[in-house]
Amino acid sequence: MTRRTAYEVAVRAEATLGEGPTWDPAAGRLLWIDILASRVHTYDPATDRRTLRRTDQHVGAVKPRAGGGLVLNLRDGVGLLDPDDTFRWLHRDAVPGRRGNDAAVAPDGTLWAGTMRYDEATGGGTLSRITGDGTARTVLDDVTVSNGTGWSPDGRLMYYVDTPTRRIDVLDHDPATGRVTGRRPLAEVEEGAGFPDGLTVDADGCVWVALWDGAAVRRYTPAGDLDRVIPLPVPRVTACAFGGAGLTDLYVTTARVGLPAPHPLAGSLLVVPDAGRGLAPPAFEG
Image 1 (cartoon, rainbow, N blue to C red):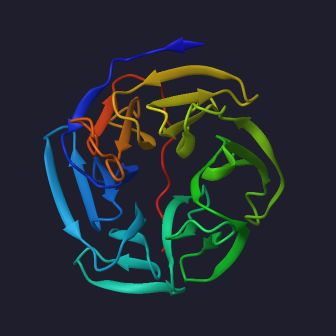
Image 2: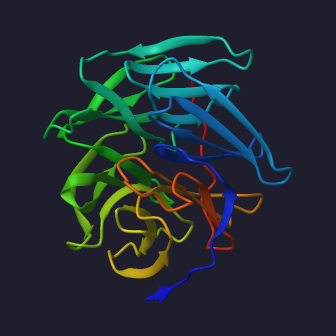
């Protein structure tokens, strides 16, 4: 197992709950969010240009769309932001006390959107597969904090985190139908090392996971072996994604919510240059 500490600050910020870094290849920029501040951020590493957009509801995830614009996993469902900044609902599913959380785009272009209750009640969340026309199918129910989701390079495995379980799970995924079966643990984060949060899968099929209250990002091999640890200065590390022109830089979001004396970098967007090689992220088909 190797340890690496060569992180840099990409965007110094004070996000309450920074989350969901996603590389947008068409625009050459990184998307990320502050869930509880209802903000969507963009960052162009080539020019250092940044933008900020406020949403009307808490936003759990944002992803690029194939035809331009963004898809948003919001408190009351999934919405679309068109290139002209027009908003419309794609799949509205408002449940009192519940909000959208992390989401991911599968290799077939569908959105896999998670939910959780604000009070984090056990079993109060779901993971749903949403197509471009807004058709939704519940993939997993009885989850608590639906978080990181990703696919192996060949699309035949799906990785998933329900944070309080402390596990990164793996499921068999049928690329033709989007069905998943055989859920089983890939790895478990030991007591005292934090909780698994957002994840990404690299070109070698390894799973990188951010550790909430663990001050680190870890990489697990497809066999479930821990082979890399990237220590970070902030305890609440929330998610990670590869970006940049060659998809070699690992971007990491962080949070300051609930910390009585946050580290000066808590809430910032960090980057580990040349950390590995990511997979080209698909855009949402809608």
